[in-house]
Each structure stands twice: as structure tokens, then as C-alpha cells.
Image 1 (cartoon, rainbow, N blue to C red):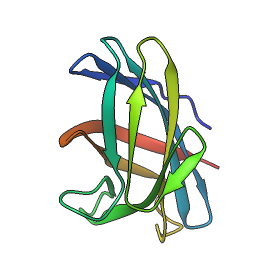
Image 2 (cartoon, one colour; image 1 turned 90 degrees about the vertical axis):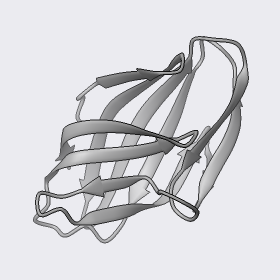
Image 3 (spheres, one colour; image 1 turned 90 degrees about the horizontal axis):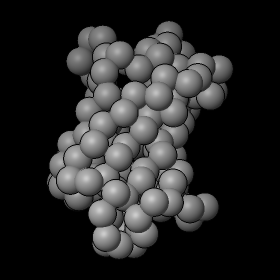
Image 4 (cartoon, rainbow, N blue to C red; image 1 turned 135 degrees about the vertical axis):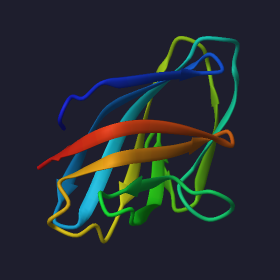
Length: 126
């Protein structure tokens, strides 16, 4: 996994993009999420209701996440978890049917607690 280590902090939660790996037409983006406040619930949306997590290619085409995995539990739509402070939670968003020629995207949108966390200029490793 390429180490881009882009970091965003929203509402005392740190989102660290470790990188995205592409295999054929599947892209997996790994994030580390850490809560800096008191224990609370967190919901990350892959697809389904409302605005999904997406990657957007250079032509503006969006690819919706097909699943979210947090703590070894995967779900096609979303994951609701309680996150304790000071612990790194690994989350993996999977995107399918991304054309082989797409090797980087200008935008990754992660929908977390109804907020869009955006990472720019994300390259894929093999």
C-alpha cells in the first residue's frame, strides 16, 4: 500500500489515508481513524442511503464504494461502531469496476457521520 498519509481532522476524529491499492479493476483505500475525544459512535457509509463514499476520476466519473470494513467486519452499505479514544481503527473502503487505465484520482470522498471527508490527488499502488 502506497504511503500517502494524508491527514484530516473533523470533530476530534483524525482520518489518516494510508493509501489506495489497485488490483485489476478493484481499488481498496485504507484509512486509520482515531478518536481524540470521549467514546462515541461513528458511522462510515460505503453505499446505499444518501451520499455514498466515492472516488472521482479525472473525467468527473464517480465510483461508489462497494463495501466498508472496520475492525475485520465488512458490510456493503455502512458500519456503525463505537470508537474509544486513543485507539487506531483501520477502515478499508472497496471500489469495484474502476477502469484499468485509472491509476490515480483527483478526489476521494469518505462519508463519515454525514460529513464528507475529502482527500485530493490520490495515487493507486499495485
